[in-house]
Length: 486
Ligand code: SAH
Ligand code: SF4
Ligand code: F3S
Image 1 (cartoon, rainbow, N blue to C red):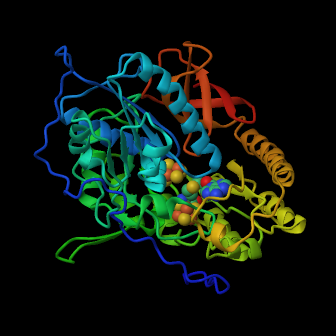
Image 2 (cartoon, rainbow, N blue to C red):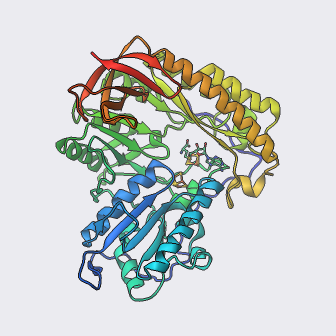
């Protein structure tokens, strides 16, 4: 398969952000030697409360952070009240995501007034984007740590214990936290995330991620497979392989003898155990290969569901977005999914309404692409300009907010209809469901997902969480399928 050939000839060739040491208040390397005091002044174990915003990568990173601090003797708590260290793992993807964190910080300020000993840290993408500016803007923040600097947390906390503020926002070309076993937070003991790569080299013009997460790097394949094996040994039934762009996963052993691409990694993880379900996210339409689709087809335990964000259905807008594929390319990839995996494979998308200079006709192209693909599900947004991105520097954010919102509402409305139709197809059929939790409405019902990622709810009978259950679906709503175990 050839690569899509669209270059962004009217914008400057994007310069990828390079690792920076800007805004480091201290110049030392993270050291494994540091021990933070694990107890409070009263001799009780220090308690960490961590809250995650944004994408699954952030939730997965919080498990790494917890592991690092667990090693230092911290306990984790699910209550902010009574915590000694509060960490917010933040997201910068849209302005609203940042506002949510600012509002949460204001609430935490109230807690800090009652408990002056409370330490407050900001992690993740907002930490990386705002760096030490955070300390000026939000006086209550003691600690600012970027996504590649979590190994330095013990040292930074020590610095804060000593009465200073601390920042480390160094980005790395190598860090994958491959050797750190995550502490599974809020886990149901059944499904888990495995990060397989970090960063992103794509430079979509609207997107802040390449700036907050740095260069793309793939994690050692052996450590990924081992993590999946360990999870199976602990009774887990499903793993989701995570990366901003999983299809560009590419790892080579140091001696250069072993090369693993995403299709091969997927196969290796699928082979860990036939009862271990494997999911992955996110697939970039420019990179998803037929080899990946054939691998999915070969293994029953690889879930038949692909999150394939289109962003727009119009080629000119896609070009402005620097997505590097055009509409025909995207349509061809969807046809390949249907050809190799059949119409039952679930497909979802992300869509952005009202990107710079998008015309009404171009917006209609997004709707027509949706009609063509009939997505099972979609995450839909209106465009939010992010400082420092290519679009912010080169394009005008010229679509009025009411127009963006109206276009978004049309996209949402159409998707609701498509989700309903796709869910309706599931009625009258038997689905293999992995029971994950009790239903939100009743402890007498279990909730889980089928291979296509549709949520299925059914009376629990003698079944329990972690069981695979064959469910005959008799009713569908926009978001859920209802059925009965057979
Ligand atoms: N790596 C994934 C996307 C990660 S961000 C991919 O390439 O598909 C998740 C989604 O947020 C994006 O797919 C996009 O739809 C949305 N998004 C990113 N930046 C945005 C912005 N500036 N305004 C509105 N939505 C945005
Ligand atoms: Fe952002 Fe594009 Fe990278 Fe996704 S692929 S994280 S949208 S730059
Ligand atoms: Fe947000 Fe960062 Fe993820 S910006 S979407 S938390 S990579």
